[in-house]
Image (cartoon, rainbow, N blue to C red; front, side, top):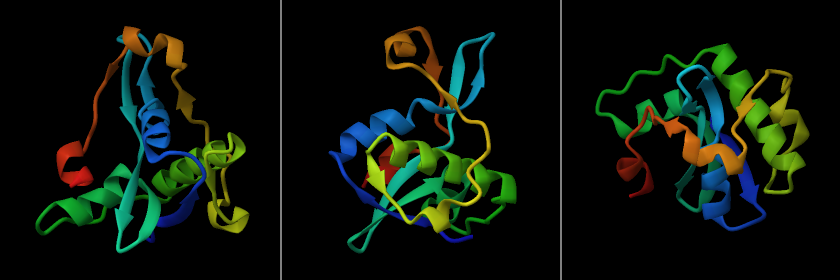
Amino acid sequence: MEMLEVKLLVDKKVIQETTNRIGIANKKKKILYPSCYIYENEGSTYLVHFKQLFTLTRENGYDNTSEEDIKRRNAVGFCLKNWGLIDVDDELIEPHDTFVFVLPHKEKSEWQINHKVNLFTLNN
């Protein structure tokens, strides 16, 4: 499945911090699993679902990204665009009606954030 190319409108670190707070939440245990990440390659910037990163960061990575995963990525992209953090063609983020949990910044210290990908590998 194709990655979603985006244009950053603010510092990349702001977007990374924001995407770290958007994903699947276990509200009872206060654990959040971020769904999407910013990925840069050959001068382009992409918003990708974490499963899409498996094909990029793992040797012999397989792509088990589902249609639901892409809808979730598109919903995250829609939020980021609405908040003025990125620019992306509206047609590329259709459909974007999937619910995504957004952890308020002020509550971040009360939650555990578990990443499904190695962020060191992703950022280097």
